Image (cartoon, rainbow, N blue to C red; front, top):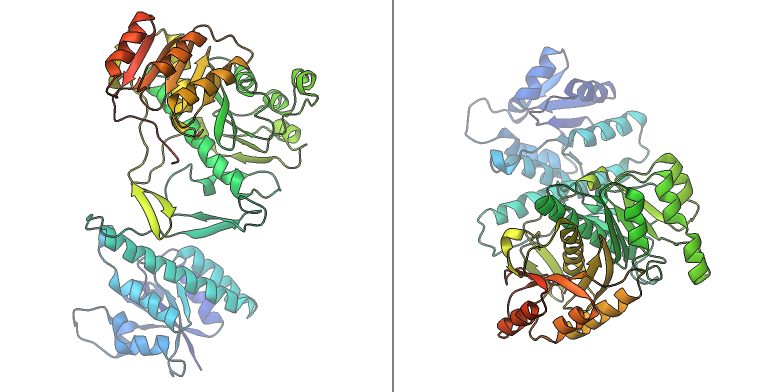
Length: 508
């Protein structure tokens, strides 16, 4: 029985090669007008779709949708059985490709080979030319991909009306993870079609160990934190310093910046809370050198304090890791090291809607995309100096990306995070932030606070001011806002009041 391959493509790359390979092993090519002309002119024996379905007149519909094509694709005992469809569908910007997606669907239904990209065709022709080994596995893979491609097409069709009556989330597996949040859970990284250069599947793992669910979830959080702090510096200062975030379970416990020296940035971040960072995560917006790697590996001062000089970092993320640095960091076998060059200039996620999966569905909303801008604030007291503003940006970024229990308050000074806290109330958050800040190796005098929710009373501000804070940023709001503002004025504390809608609630 003859084996037929149907070429229905306008893309001509590799066309002659594919046809020559298939005909050399006994296949017969059927082609639509564009590939037919090319193959015919090249001297390849090819059948036009017109001749195959025996229609010479123009009927106003694609001949690939003729019942004879469907029969040849779906009936096992068809005498002229089409075994392979090569069809690269066009996008919605060019129209609704009913014919192309129907061809792929028919090929999948008939358990044929539905090929919908140049790369897939390269792989399939190579396998077919080599024999029957792995053929059925490749067939099933192509069928699954065709179904996914068809689903994406119709999902986009649903969203065109922009009525928000339907929302689809289509994911494909990138790789299996070591385990879920707990060792008994099974997990994998699923990817969504996205052009975001900081999508997690675009980070390169340069160590041999496999990350777990928690590693990836934590990485997503610290990438978000680095991006927002980086963008706030760009917006307010017009430039970006060397930035390092040290975190535990995705929450910053140390952040350091320096305009001239990346090593100082790392030092500030690690010593923000040297006990909490043990076994945590670090991310930078600069290339990690051998000198930087040594700082991330161990510290004699830490050994004197805690009896262990190693930072024991589980996750290190950077734009690039120098070869010498990689050798140093790989000495700890459990450390996972990821790189992505885009971290030099990170941006926000590109999704128009974000979902939180809940029982029976999702909560859907527009993304948390606000970046601090001084155009959005009203000053109580005098605006800050540039050095103070550096600390304010860090405090704001940490308060707005952390999940410490709600109503987050962060405290920073001299370009580094001192402490952050959260809790059921802003009083709890302020108390915890102060308590943690007092354990840092810096005095709290002239420190700067940031809160992600308005102060309903003067109690939380009193805790921060009495601890040494002389400036801060907080969203406006609350029926007692005038009392809170009056308190800051009386204490000569400079505070930026953000517009009320720019609260920082995240990860609820």
